[in-house]
Image 1: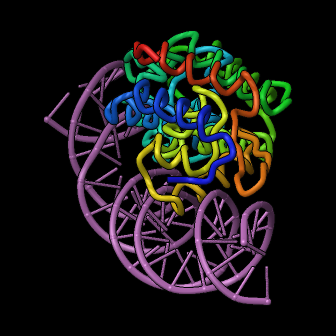
Image 2: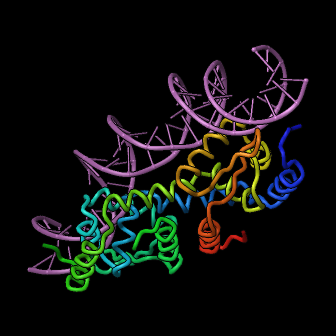
Image 3: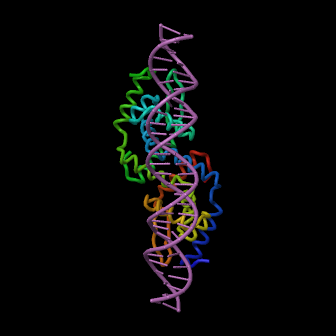
Length: 116
Length: 116
DNA sequence: TTAGTATATGAATAAGTGTTCATATATTAC
DNA sequence: GTAATATATGAACACTTATTCATATACTAA
């Protein structure tokens, strides 16, 4: 037992929370999705792709990194359905997967009072 | 130079991307904010607090973890302004910082086609 | 086919981070 | 003051992960 001053309300909230808690598997999916966009190197790629689709070479240029590092990060973003790719000749052209992605970034910016 | 099939458009997009790229410091802020909500243990706490404010004891019960682990995670969420705390007697009562937090979770769920 | 360019990837190393354990602080009751 | 309860925190270990380097694959042109 506990000495919580709000035993009643908190215990009810805790019980509801337990009942409505997403399954471990769903929590992990959400976690994985957020982690995919949480890394500075990957955030830069997303902000770059906000300007339109781009091939790896130009993404690398836009974010100021190396081809290998960018390619590794693109893989992670792609695996998590944050971006999509299509091959066009020698190039692979990347773009944001859907509108949710930029909406998420916008919300986060709003929360931080940042202007992007 | 490059052999990109879309040299013109991509080069323009890359140039715009460079111009509009948030500063390193802003990217890091965003990254830190997303990382704060990216961990399964912390996501569970947020889903728990969706049911209403709770003290540490009940949060621990709701997420099924240990007092110490929860306290460490609460610290991270609090430092990142994802949740807020107020002391009430022996207890410290936590709640979501603002509506942005649940909006972010909802958007992410939507992106993943999950029902929470 | 060969040469050249674009992109991807495996392995290794280095940096970051979550949990546990022990302990410290804060508040209340006596 | 002491005891009991609630919460916080520092250190250590285990685990994850981003980058680098070397190399592999894919496509084009000749």
